[in-house]
Image 1 (cartoon, rainbow, N blue to C red):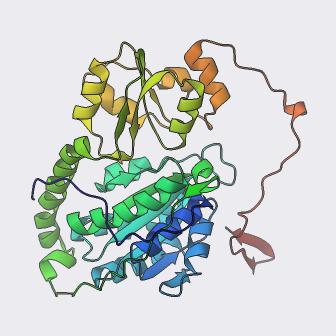
Image 2: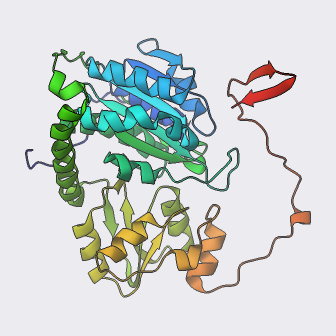
Length: 371
């Protein structure tokens, strides 16, 4: 594998008026600009609007699938045949789609393939707080995580370039606050990427044991290359300020950190798997106290500690629910967190996923609802 830096996709610049976009809308915009031809998804909050927005582009064959596994297989088939494709689902949908996703990591993709997974910290419309970053690690698939709508657009385009350059699907991880916030986006022109020619290759695309054994070393080599290249990727950004405290973070947590501790030095990770360990080690050397701020599981913190780098993280922020500016101000500045009584809040019972297609089946006089 060539030792080169993965560069963001470039297209002819066409100035358009900057406008506010949902994070999900910006992902759709980025996919359209990247020349996507096929989109297949299964609806589930907070991912649904990505596909609804993709359906508005006439250049994209956009469809709902019967479940996430079928959606991933449709996108996988399109990518294998040489067309750029995207599939979108919420975090629990990745469980359903895991079979073809893990296989796609071995076979490669030909045309670019991006898997959008939207996690739901605090379970606003979900049955668990699953952390999809585990899937990136388990499947050996790179994962990008944007921190605002502009990055949603930019990282989607970058993901397609990475996918084709490295012959792998790429995860784009969102969370509810990124998917459903609005921030400015500078749109661009569509890059009408031609369909790549398909070449029959049984050893590459048929994963019987004999073929899979030969593909596995290629997966490991790709991951090693990415781990090294991540140290120079421009989406992993160091900003040195006060060196008494340095914070490593990603996604919406970066926005919380900047507001709660504007004086702190930061390393904002745009790629959350694999991690740029050389960059992290260098950043750690230049700060007195190193803190990892991440929602849900402490994946980044554990990897940093495993590399022998001292840091704090989940001992301060915990494993459950969303973080916020207020919570970070308290735990990072030693302030007392304000108490909020349940009686002070309006009653907001859980609902089925808004904008999703609700399928109601009557089976043996029992109503089953599928979200």
